[in-house]
Length: 109
Image (cartoon, rainbow, N blue to C red):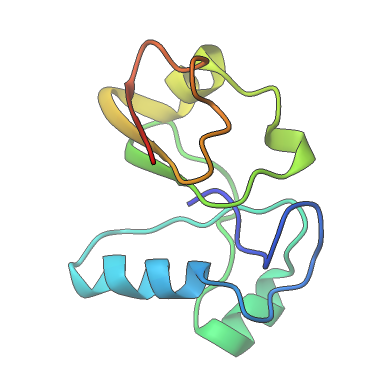
C-alpha cells in the first residue's frame, strides 16, 4: 500500500482511511507492506497496529496507491515493474497514473 497519511504531502495520520484498507486485507490473510515517505512508523503502529515496511520488495502481486505524495508523482512503468510480478495489479484509487501504467494490470475509479 502506497500512502498512509490523511492526505497528500503531509505527515498527519489522523482520520486516515488506509488503516481500514490494511485491516480488511489482513482479514483475508494478505501480507501487507505499507510505505509512506511522510508518515511516522511508530505513530502508525501505536494508532493502528501496523508500521511502515523497512524497504519496498520486488515481487508484489498488487500495489494499492492510496495517497499520491509528491515523491510518487513521476512513477510509471519502470518503477512499478521493479516492485511487482509481471501479472500484478496496480489499483490506483485517485487515478493519478491513468495512461502512465501500460505494462501491468491497471485499475482506477
